[in-house]
Length: 400
Image (cartoon, rainbow, N blue to C red):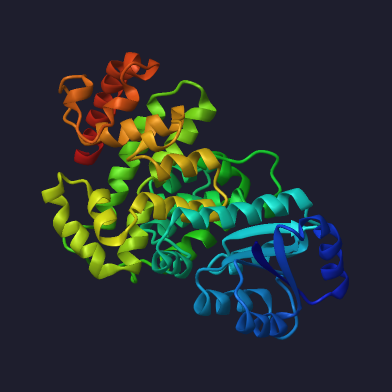
């Protein structure tokens, strides 16, 4: 059974939750704490999978409580349940919360969020890796992002579309923007997969705050030989641009761009959480044909793909994007979608030289068995041509 702890300082709110969730009592083992101190006492006496807390409480408030949960019980999923009037306080909770829900909360939305948080824990079999992810709540973002957004926002002729382009260049920042705008807290009817749409919804000031919080971890990102955040983000952005070119339909194109942008975020988490092991992964990768995920599986029991997908899933990104990240090296493990195949192929093509043969067997790091004999094999030569165009354009931009 799922073990859920609800925390609020108002008894009638807790009573309401008991009534709403009465039908779930055979699936969830639920506890209700009247305030932060009572919650901490319960956490010391029994294990929990999820903590769902109000924000504003006397004594130990929600942010403080979830920070303590993060430090003491990092494997527990942390969810904020708070009123719309407290939207300004959401930024303060970003470092300690995985998800946000608004009051009053639809019971089906609450159920779906909790089940997803618990279900994604099954992606990682290694308890130590789950603990590492629980401790890492902000991915490092390049320091220039905040400066670029601030400078752009001060120019009268610069619009949100221009600011969105700045965000799109930074994978970590883009993830944070999508985490917030897709949280149930904001109650959007449809999940946002477009960074540009998310930027337009959040506005400049929220973006600046997000950039500041994301940058805190820059100094904490360890220096690892032959691995830099710049190189990782350049590869991610090129993969995103290639994947986007595969689709004409705007919604799918932007989803492909987003999935490509975040497909390797798990590497950042591993670099921060298990530095020595990740250094060994980087050292051994050339002998494994550059396939880091194979070395990670050998040394850690999991790979950056699963680690990244786990965190993105907790943050509430759309399932198809989470799936594309989780299986971008091994699409054969699930029934592959267009989005998953696009990211898998774009990741492989981003590392080829323009003009090389547009044949499946000529492209390394590609699962030929998933593509051969399908509609994707027919469009593959065209995808190679689009990737060549994007790579040439990328190199021109780098020279200028």
